Picture 1 (cartoon, rainbow, N blue to C red):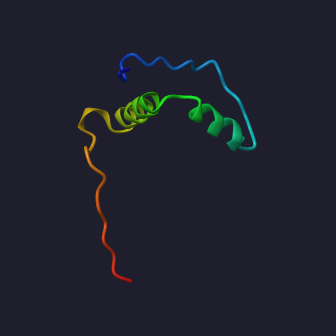
Picture 2: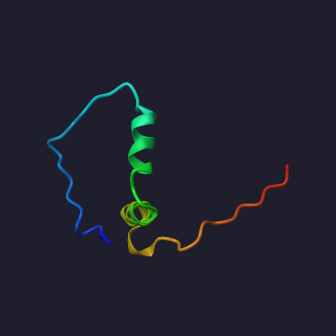
Length: 64
């Protein structure tokens, strides 16, 4: 599995777009194995939260 230390960001690549083509994105992720998808989610969580990210999603209960 990749760690956040292994990830390199190419700051010279920049694209301006009016939106995302959802079909291409969906096809890309459907072409990946479930293990690759989970590894990508874990990597994104580590990038966003660092090493101290929550292991579980916080439950929020609201009475309307």
